[in-house]
Length: 262
Image (tube, rainbow, N blue to C red):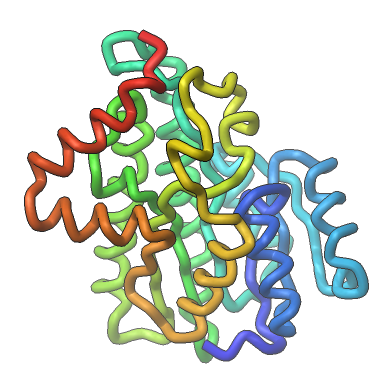
């Protein structure tokens, strides 16, 4: 897709990959509808856009609120694509120690929020000459990560829904891409309302800068990619998991052991 003069909606645009996606798209000549639950963070994104800020429209919304999402297209009407980026992680604990409130919160935002946004805007996108849907899954969406099992389940659901959507829309004007970020330097832990896990560090888990991740996603949109894998860790674990799932599962379990609080 040629992004010049297109109108793209980005969820989670107030921080992390979502913020960098917004800034990267603006540099491509795209008009961005920046969506987030936090107004202050959206205003900071707009400030960082500098002269391009005139091409940002902001919307404060909780994507887990189905009614609010269903009403959003009426406020926007003209749109060429959506990037479902907003998401949270779970506390770094095993399923046995994870409460249902945390489980439901992760599933509601990561999976249902993505589903609500997709369902709400797909009818509008199908009317455009060319349109795009990008859904952000995770390396944890194809590789089991102890201490993030429910997060992984939510992102696996995003993966399969998006790939199914791709097949359903193959003969239409709507392109579909699923993205798998590996370890990325964002503030997702804080935004998820969690404390930084003990035992983890960037030295143990090298992270891809959010700006780099965003640029790769934008490149994927421009080239109509089916899948985009972000980071050397994600690419190597995708290969290893396909080659030997059991070995890959045991390997990542050892890497995550120090992060588990229980």
